Image (cartoon, rainbow over all chains, first blue to last red; front, side, top):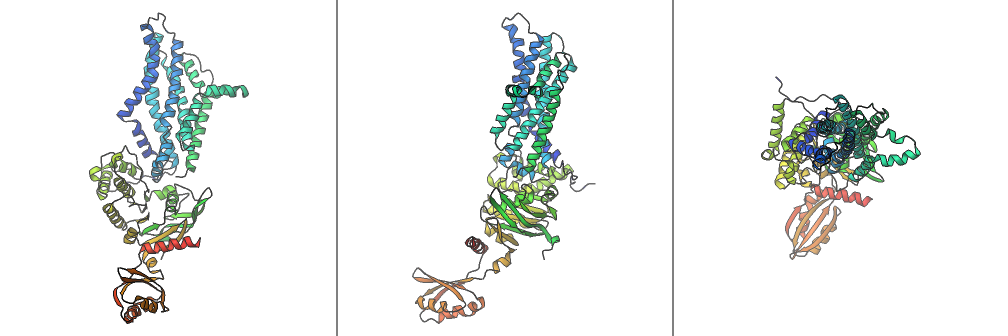
Length: 262
Length: 321
């Protein structure tokens, strides 16, 4: 019979990851947070999408909305909400704990700094995916199928959700990276918002470097739109570049956080 | 003897510079095993900087440090497995209860069994007197309660080394007394390294002290040695009658360093500093009483306390600048 506490095995690189992830997950997975998040996301995505579909006919519009228009509204609104939502939810994740001293307290335990960053990435990605992408995706699927007059092809729809997940990961990793670099929320919000509106800036850069906008993650929601409508993926380039951006941002976040002094 | 095996903390030339400011200058610290080591110094002396370097929260600019023989730069996680730490201003997740926070802390160290973990938590909560508030969110805690929780968190893993940054700072006298008692209890199994401003507490529980001033280590010794090490011994004497003569006579002795006189309620108070304690013991009172008309109403040998030693060392170091 075991009569003593069992020390955890020594894992230098991922030391403390599981324990930190458990606490980070507990912030997401409590009834109050789940209800609040679900209502906010439903109001921001599904309600906006349902408006022209349900309210339009009530207002006496005789013509049914074409599916292309419905999918366009969905992907445009959804991607914008995912980008904003990720930035808003994660802007204080690192900075808040650095400012309050909680980060120093946690790091005085046997936890590696990689574990600290990765636990925030994993818990927030799973949280936003569940409440933001899966729940909203499912409700919106029903609305879009109603607009279409028949169920949309499920495989294409799931692929599109995968593309939007990648798009969301871009903003999650970007916000974490900015949180490791800055000690205030202002620059994080400012820079991240500038990137949300990347098409505007990208357009200017595109005049100098031809094809610049084609590598930006915003092309992913256009790709998602095409895929839902049964068209082939327009280009693999934004998928590849977004993956590269995510890896780069996470690498930078870990590198910078490793050098941070508390 | 402080052999490397007997040392829990050993630093050599440990230096920390922030931009152009040297927060810590070439620190050579030796903390013996199972000691209660008081780390003293005025505000901004570099105490917290040292603690952060030992914990790997900050990186040294120069020099090296070892805790349990492990390097503070490359083996920080292994070191932290054996340390319990209390920050100067303890910060936790305020939405959590103290029981949840202790469970979280233990989760970094142990995997179970669950009932033993809960038992350890309960025993720790009782030790610091928080068992009746164990399931309330920390956001409603007073400063003292937060400090107690901080101490509970520092020792719940039964660490080999406790690093406490101002452990009694936010506590009332009863709380301070409790903390000192806890520290005494922990000495049997652990080494306690703590920084403080409260010199009374240091004198009560510490066996070794180090004094830091402006980032420089100005003294490091067992407390007894430090208290005996001061060369000046003073006597407070109150006399009635012609004190001028007594003043002159005492001042003329070669073993007397200085005599200061001041009037006090019609009597004269003499503060006599001597260089030779043996001579003073055998001759000082006799000399004073030999002066015609002088009555000695009070004769007290001042015992130096840590505060006197601390002030003289720190002020001495400041004068040298």
